[in-house]
Image (tube, rainbow, N blue to C red; front, side, top):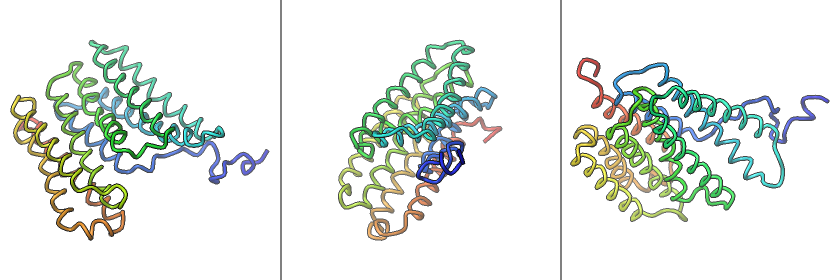
Length: 270
């Protein structure tokens, strides 16, 4: 049988890797990992393994979600790469668990990811994958890379690592409400106001309880500034090309990540 005969309708053979088109999540994943490593104040080979594990887990979600959407038939290419990405992520996760001094910490983190994946799968099945609730859960799961990197590097879990998880989740979730302004059906300025108000209150609480340093907590102001600028130029934002929206979100994310990382590193490194 020729290759063209076994190739799926998309024109790609089963051995061509699937890659998630959600480019914003790549930024979210890297920034979260770097903030977790900065809090640990070191980068070890276990930190690298944690990043690879998170990356492969993220890549496995794409064929997983696509196969659920193809509920009437099985797609070999999707199943093959779901197995490859999922297998690599699972193997690294088990290795980290086996060699970790406090495996309960990793089990808790893995449990959160599994629950988020199941919720995401159910939402996709019900065609609700773009709902605000599901996107908030998905973003929080990806931002779990911060405590994963910290736990894998240090062998412990601190309040700072938990606070960074929350901070990253709140910052990146703000994009959900700004991007939805571009569609009439989902546009809600008041929803954005409510999200940023609640997030600001939570960040202030993390600062007041000393879970976050003032400068680290202050990095969330990037989200507030971005939201204010978008409202100021709302008509342009809602009608411009998606590439410009991606540039705005990426620039804001890199600025946010830089502030957080520099605020966490010791003076001789930052």
